[in-house]
Length: 428
Image (cartoon, rainbow, N blue to C red; front, side, top):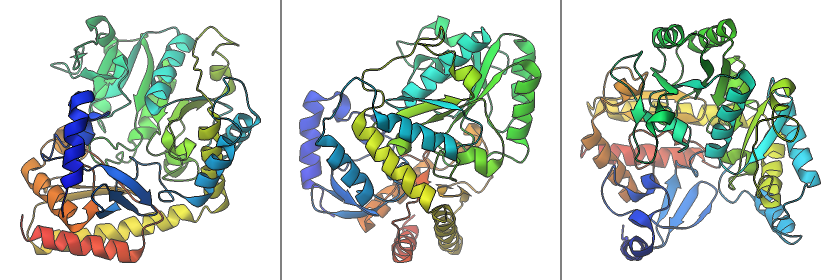
């Protein structure tokens, strides 16, 4: 394929945008080469500025559950835009989508809309600290909850040691209140809880990790985590920015039958527009201003365009709950096809999948946390990524990202993808 226009645009972008991109992973730094500049998308496909078409397995990092430019969402945005794009005042639609989300997701009484998944997770942590009157939190190595200071912490030298900032601009004072556990490792959690007894406000986790590839929780892991929180007066926060309204009608909580105290959502709750939300039972949410002492605000929170898009998306998912079964079946079909190809070509690999999330790791050992995910053969992944790009298949430009399946994908698209992987596998 030719990427002349994308290359020109990237050179222009580098002059006025740091690194030429507005989010680092878009720069192709992990895989090398020049990023593709998107021009349009429809259904299962994205088209670049050079006119190339790709089968899309990023889907805007998850929210395009029903495919790009889904007509009810597009129409809702167009009609709402005609009435005004932002008011900074309450609208009826905010109550409508809030009521629908509460109906769909188990265990929540109230919801607050914000502008991104990062803002939702940041606000959830502040709320948990205010509600419990404790300062420390536990997060898991490899889980990403946005770029708020509290989350940009790398592991210390041992399970009991404090983490340290892994980005300039994050203070050591902030870092000392964030404790790092290992995903799928209850012993690491118990060690931190015991060493910081009575000081931990919340444990935040991706119930199905999506930022070190797709890593499902081991059997009993989330259930025991729930018990640890109950026993120690700790709030359990599920970051469902990726899994919410994707793995099931009620997200990972419904699918895995484990309930959190606070749940956060991202772009899918706005039909792919910039939006986020956090929700909990009433006694926790009522700690927020203007009812309670925990302050959180935003002029664009509940933006009418995002609310219109989100309401259209959630209505579609509510009306056709069979979509989640279709997504799971398509993802399993893709997994089986990839397994057959990589096995026949004697390539070392592990595939993780849950629902419509899937990832390919170029290592034959099980991948169940960040450490095991890091053992994958990145050089092989780079060749795999660029090979698929040449074949017209677009996956995330990082070995540590989940693929997201959309309902717009046909089985012909999946077969095309499997055939493309067959061609690329012969070159690895």
